[in-house]
Structure formats: structure tokens, C-alpha cells
Length: 259
Image (tube, rainbow, N blue to C red; front, side):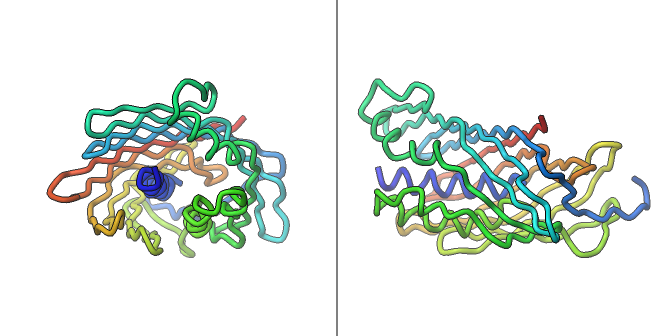
């Protein structure tokens, strides 16, 4: 169970980090207002020695926008997963958690997350000033609290940090993350600007550690931002990694809708 949770944690990190015309310059800055709200759906699948499909639903509310400090509050509405390994399959759905020992165990572990409200503070470039404290959600479970303590650091990269200078179509900026378990460097290239969207191509390299085993891989995909607010609108990424001679493929997508 602990190994599965560790792999799920790495998947979430890779998912989260992979997801947030003409010659005109485009200065990218978050531009939101108090009271703005977004629905967010996140899906991920992994194929390899372990097969996982995961879905998460959440809401993100803008609490305040004072003195170039944007405060958001995230609430998780649902989590579901299907996992199979060595011919054994298990499932969990927070909306219908009963029915199996695995499901009951997962619900006991994750239910505090479903009732939590996590606040993040960042500036208009996306530099996180205060990340949510994931570990505090699981203060009654020391083992899980230790695993989730790194999520606080990882959530510092939930929002893309935009470059200081404006971009033209075809120009790029670098973005990345490094902690004890996951390192990635990516290049976001502005490929298209419409009346409502900024569209970027993503390329990058990924390395991770699971169960004492180091793995490396590549990341490709696209990411779209609302032009008016520069908030993320959608992300589609594919990560391919080599693990013990096998290719693991992680595909993730995110959709954010203002309501």
C-alpha cells in the first residue's frame, strides 16, 4: 500500500507540474478578481508494470487580490482510481467508497483531503509566496503525513511562473521543479495566440525515484491559458519513462472552466 501511494504521489506531481499573433509582444501576468471561481478536472493514466487510471475534481476560488498577492482556495470534490498489477485489480471512488477492503482503506486515508480547503498565495507572475500545507491535513496519520509533506513543496509549482519579459510567437521560457523525488525541466514555447487563449507547446525531461529506483524520461504536450486572466485552461501531456527495461507511459489532462 505504501509503495502504491508513493507511485500515486509521483504521478500527481507529474500531472500537476505538466498542467498549469504575429510579432506582437505578449506580457503574461495573472489577472484575476476577487470572487472568481473555477471548476477543475484532472485525469491521468499510467501504463507499465503498474496500470493506474485516476480522476480528480476540484474547485478553485479567488479569495483576494491585494498588493500583488493573489490568494486562492482549493477544495477537492472527488477522487477515483482504478489500479491493476500482476493480474489483480482494485478500484476506489470517493463518491461511492464502500465495497472492498482497498476502497475502504483508501477512503479512510483520503477523506481528510476531501474536506480540506487549501489556500495558496502567489504574485501576478505565478511565484508562490505561500504553499498549502498538505501534511497538516493528515495529522492523524504520521506515515501518510510524512509522504504528503513533500506535496507542500510540489504545490509551489502548481501555477506556472511566467517570465519577466514579454513573449512573441515562437519564443520560449523555461520552467521546472526539483525535490527529493522528482526533477523536471521543461520548455514552454508560445505557438499561437487567439482572441481568448495563449497556446504553448511543452517539451522537457523528467527524472524520478520510486522504491530506490531511479527513472528518467521525456515530457511532451500542449498547455492553454485564458488570455484575459492567464489562468490555466487546459493541459495535455505525455511522459514516457524507462523503468527496469520497461517503458512507462503517463498521460494526463486538465481542464479548468470559469463559472
